[in-house]
Structure formats: C-alpha cells, structure tokens
Image (cartoon, rainbow over all chains, first blue to last red):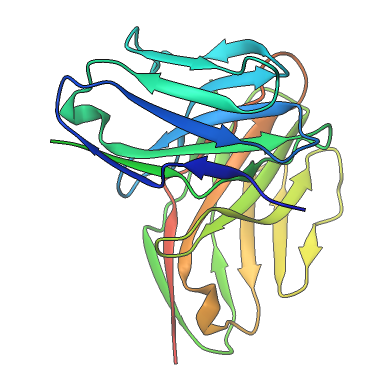
Length: 112
Length: 116
C-alpha cells in the first residue's frame, strides 16, 4: 500500500515564473486536499477535491493559483507569476470515507 | 468559524517520562473529528490519533492517549514512556463532519523535544 506521493520534493524558482506541483493520492482515496505550510505554522487549507470535482477553495487561493484533478486520480497545483510570499511547503493529503487524511511529504517551494 | 489553539509553543521531556500537550478549540458544531498529527524534523505529517466527538470514550493508540472534554472544548494528548523518536512538531486539528467542508483546521503546533 503506497502512501501519498508528491513531486517535485523541492523547487527553486525566480519571481514571476510559473510552477506546477503534482500529487498522487492513495489509490482508493476519492478525496484530495491541498494545504500550504509556512515556517513555524500549522498547515492552512487551500482546496479540496472529491473525485474530479473541486468542492471548496480557500480565500488563500488567489487567482494566480489553480488546481485540477482531471480524472479523479492525481492532482496538479499551479502557481502563476510566483511571488516571494509564495515560498512555503505545499502539502497534499488524501482520504476515503473514513475521512482521516493522510499526508504526502510535501513540495518545498523557494521563490527568489 | 472554527479555531484551534495550542498554547505551548515548545515543550521538553526526559526519555521514558510522560508529557501532556494541550489543545483547545472553538466551534458551534456538534459533529466533528479531532486529530493529533506528528511532523518529525524534515519529514512528513503522520497521524497519531483520532477522536470522534460523539464518542465519550477517550481514544488510545499504544503510548498515546487523549483527554477529550467536549463541554470544555479541550483535547489534550498524553505521551507515555517518551522515546527519542517522539521528538517532533505536534499539531492538533479539527474537522467538521458532513457538508462540503472537508478540510482540517490546524493549530500552530507544539515543538516537543525528548531528551536522553
């Protein structure tokens, strides 16, 4: 039973560039979540999918952020025109009907 | 809106001793889950324990147990026989049951150091 995987694990980019992260959930999980975690803080919710439907988006998710889960399996999170304030750890989690969320290792983004 | 508060930014404990981490939350909902997650240094978030609000019995997982006080909106984590591998950030989290809202609301965390 493989856990949640995320790629890349680290990303360094220059301000203004676009970046895309991928999350592969646990195979039988139909729910997928994205969170952002800054240093010394708990994760903050960004968005949530049930199968391929995006059911909720946080106010934190500005117009520069977009997430997809095209076939209800893996998900991508894209940040356009990155800013230094986007530097953070981006966490993905998945869950089934039991509703307990299992987290991936995260993608650490540094915007220079 | 729901909030989760962890009032202890850092704690330390000697190996083999017991430590309790505090968490309080605020909600007007009656049906929810509470969780404790552990995040070791540079490693991923791991579920420690889960409590359903409708259950009066406190959850237990080996050396980890909770003291759930629904009326007081308190959810503390007790770690018995602390081990060096317990060194980590511990996050308390709340999740409402039902509706379209499925996200976890986290506290700011407590950094636990287990000393040999």
